[in-house]
Image (cartoon, rainbow, N blue to C red):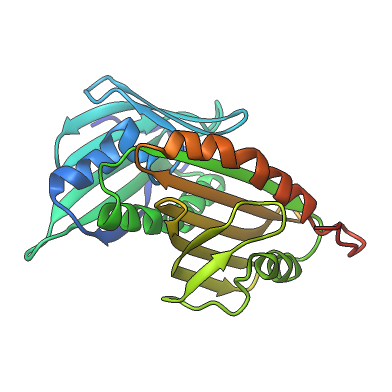
Length: 279
C-alpha cells in the first residue's frame, strides 16, 4: 500500500461511493454482463474489454467521449478491479471494483464501488455523478438479464439538448410518444409521426424536479429496451434516447431505425421561443 501526497498540508482521504442492484440469472451470466465487451454493450454503451490483469477496458459513449481503464485485478466470475486516469492530469486515479454476489434462492447482487485517494474535495462531483448515473443503466441491466441474457445486441443511441425547462421538454416529448399518462406495467404503443412504431411494457418511471426517465421493455417489432431520460445540465435540458435491440436481427434493425428516430428527435425539439416544429 502506497502513501498519497498531501494537499494543502492535508493527507489524502479515501473517498468512496457504491451502487448495487439485484438481478436475475447465474453468477456466470451476471459476470458476462459486466465483464465482457458484448455483455456491457447490452445495457451500457459499446464496450471492449480485454479480460485479464493488465488488460484494457474501453467504453465508447458518443462522439469524442471515451472512457478507458486498466484492469488491475481479475477473479471471474465474482470480481474485477480497474483504474482510470481519464479526468485530467491533476485528477487522482479513479478505482472501480465490480463484484457479483450470489443470493440464496437464485439471482445475484451486482455492485460497483468507486474510490479516489485525495484530500481535495473538488473531485467529489465525479463520485456524485457516478452514484447518480449508474442506477438508470443498472435498471437496463436488470431487464436484460431477466429477459434477454446472452442475446446479440445493437444500440441505437441518440442525444440532443434543448434550451427550455426540463418539465416543458418532458411534457412535449412524452406527449409525442404517447407516454404522458403511462404507468408501470402498462402496455404502450409509441407511434410518433415519421418514426417506426414501438410497442412494449413500461418497466420503470422516474418523475422528479428536472429529472424524468422511462424504460419500456419492447416486444414489437423486435425485443429490446427503450430508454428515455431528461435532466438539466449546463443550463439546458439534456435528452438521451437509447434503444437496445436484441436478437440475431438486432444490427439490421438498429441500422434501419437509427436515421428515422434521429430525424424525429430533431423535428420534435422545442425551441427557446416555445415554437414547436411541425411533426
